[in-house]
Length: 247
Image (cartoon, rainbow, N blue to C red; front, side, top):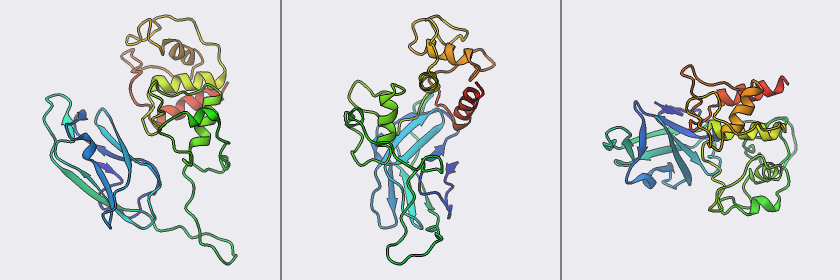
């Protein structure tokens, strides 16, 4: 199963492309061979990541409107996580939505594509700070640079020891728990093993997970685990945010 679906004629120009497999998967020997190309065979820069059964492919920039794209996953790119057998070549195509028509008059210039994540409440990009420029994988003109810089300045997020930020890497439940705790300014509880069987004393995220649980923003699973390395879904993030807004 893919999203957008194969043959979709109204796919969004922003957001990740996902491929769901029937079993857990892992990177194969030809991992870097995944391609996203337009109808003219122009290659689009992408980043790819795996979480359990899902392959997520994220374009580095918005796709063009009313354009057909093809994802190709060659033989050997993906392996079964259990028996390490390679998964055969897979390819699918989709077409993005037509250019939206805008109201309002005025002659001259044509309409421009909307900035990703530009909602009614989020219409201005914070000014970039020196912190953001330290990351080797964030271009100075990246649309999200200012937002990253704002969160860096507040110590809500940080980068990796190799000097990268990995902007398209999925966020884990543990990482998002830490972001929420710091953003809310909560007092972080003392280090301890915590209530979850898979969070041992000494785990870097234990304090943040206990703190966010204390504030009722998130719980664990029925088997008494937290699964800190599991990718945080949009639904889980919505629950955490809604929980803290009740305070």
